[in-house]
Structure formats: structure tokens, C-alpha cells
Length: 500
Image (tube, rainbow, N blue to C red; front, side):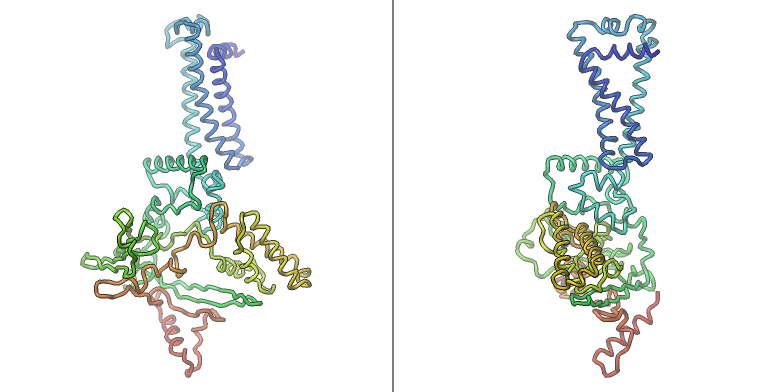
């Protein structure tokens, strides 16, 4: 049994090179299907195992196939035999009887070739499918993509595959993305990649092809109530409220303009920034009804910007990611991160100075991630043991949970190995330092007549409370003699009379 197969294998394994080819090909073939079976049943889930399964085994398989004919060629050259003589000596005359196409050796090679082609196609499809999974993107290059993976898992788009935003549609986009991936992998191997990794604003797909597959501009209308809780640095971590009635219209409903007016199909906003940093605007312009553009130029540019050449100036038409630049890989502000955990009940503010202690612990300068985790625990436990020794014993469990939550905040947002600290990746949404709305809505950008782009707060939202002890403070009218009475009344009427 299997005598013919054994004879065939002996016939092609004439040299060490040929034997190695057979070993590589056969073992890679068997291991691929074995590992694939284990992954299907959920026994093997690690991304590195996937790399071995879908990259290493197919490469070994192809490498083995190449070695086999090389071994034959070397043996033929060494023995100084013709191809016909080599075939007869290796496989016997009975395998070569009849026509070439009808011989046993031809049929065997044909069948094996078909199997090889099918295997390579299967491996290729499986590899592409595996490389499209978020788990591969986030964990295959752990050091490089670890920070992005940590933020992705906690993001609003955690169920959206990476490739749906980072890879375009069509064969060309697929090829480009894989070539880019090879370059990135090579940089990772040589340890020549940038730290921190630059935000890929240059090669991201347009938001019309990504964001708007789910978020329709036609549906951006009406109002949305937003309550922001901020906790103080005092002993009780006292909450203060900012309540905003957000106007999210594009301008289509009753001709009301809101936040998403900037990206409505009928509007067009363009701007220029230096080296595509999108922070300091050189100018911004808005398309008028007659098709012309009204430009607002930055009146406070320094000499380096004024003398910049055309290659350094990037002109862009505004879309979703100009404000929502961290829609998925969201790095938090330390104070806001603590506030959010307190609001969700993940941190107990019954402990003295909850916010102040945690914020001090997570913002300290640590040399590496491990030191940060240990340092946070030492700082927080040490603080309560020194200042409140009895309480530290009574509430040991609560303090331990608080330490664990603080370590989680730090682990998500700070990655010393990649030079990622607090504020490394700023968000352009909202009023954060000089990054949000005020990049354009400020007194520096003026048109030819000296008019500024309005930065009136009520353009985008009504304020129902601002750093108040109640979420709807301005809805409660104070005494008529109060200096704030008129403002409260105006805000209250604006909110009550709104139409969605």
C-alpha cells in the first residue's frame, strides 16, 4: 500500500535540498490545517498564532515547493544526466510508459500541482480575512499598535472593523493598504518607526465614504441635551454641572444652522494650515450663494508662516474628521477621565479628595508603564495611610478598587514606550485649549472688511447651566432684582421655545 507514493517521494528527494523541500511543504500543509481547525474551535485565538498560521506556514509551503526542483536541478547537474535518464533512474520505466501526458508521473505531478494551487488560494483568502480583523491590527505589532488597540476597545466604534475606515474600496485600495502594511512591518522589524506614531490624516479615506455610511447628514437636525459633570479638587469632590442644549442642525430644517452646518452638502468650508497640522489656520473660506468664496485670513501670522512655500501649505475641504479627529482612538484628558469614572459610579467619591488624589497619581511622571502602575498604587495607598490611617483600614477594599480604576485610566491613555503622554493626541471636538472650534472661530481670522468669524457661544448651543451646583440652574429664575435675572430668563425662554 502507498508503494507508488513512496517511490514518487523517493524520486524527488534525491538531494538534501529536495528532502528539505518535502519536509517544509508537507509539514506546512499539515500544520496549516491543524492550526486552522484549532482556531475555528476557539482553542487558539492569539494574533501571533494567526501570523504563524496564515503567513509563516504558506511561506514555508511555497519555499519547500521551490526547493524541490532546485534539488532536482542540482542532482541532474552533478550526475550529468539528461532529464529522461534522470526520470527513469528516479521513478522507474513503468511510471513513464505510454505518452508523456498519460504517464503515472505526469498524472501525479498534475494532481499535486492542483492541490498546491488550491492550498495557496485557500491560504491567501484566509490570510486576507485574518488581516482584516481588528485583533490582528491591534495585537500583531503590540509595541507599535498597543496604544491604538487600547483606545479602540473602549471607543464608540469598538464593533467597527479597522479596515472599514483605514482601507478604501476596490482592488487598488487593497493593494495599497497591504504595501503600506509591509513598509510598516519592515519599519517595526528595524525599529525605525516614529514615536509617537503620527495620526494618519494624509491617507485616511474621505468621511463621505466612511462616517456617512452610518451617520447621515440629512438626519442631523434638532437638539440634543448634554450634561457634563465636573468634580472639584476639594475634600468632597463636589460636582459642578455644565448643561448644554446642543444645536446639531445642518441648516435644512426651517433654515436653522447648527454644528453640522459645516458639512452639509449644500455648504462648503475650506481652510489652509501649515504641513497639514490643522491647528493654526492660515485662512478659512466659505462658499457663497453666487459660487464665490468669502475668505477670512489669519491676521497674526509670523514670518515663518508667511514665507512658507506651496508644498508646506495644505488646503482642505472641511468634513467630519476635522472636528471628530479622534472618533475612535480617543485619548482622554486626565481630569475628564476621572470625572467620567466618578459619574459612572466606578469611583467612590465618599473617600476624601477622591479626584485630587487620583489625578495627582495618574499625571505623575513615570519612566515606563510598569513603574506607572506600581507608582499609582503606592501613591494612592500611601496617601490614605498617612492622612487617614483609620479610614485606610476601614475602606481598604474601596481604596483597592479605586487604585485599579486609576491604573486602568493610566494604562489606556499613557504609553511611555511610544512617547505618548497626556495631551499627545488632542481632540479637535469642543473647546479644548486651542484645538477645537476656536481654531477658526476667533478674533484673528478676518475678511477683507475686517469682519471676524463669529464665536458667539449660542451659535452651537444654549447654556442651561455653567459650573453650577444643579444641572438646570438657569431654568430656575432667580429673584427679579438679581443681576443674572435677564440672562437666566433669556436662556430659559430660548430652551422652552425651541422647535425640534
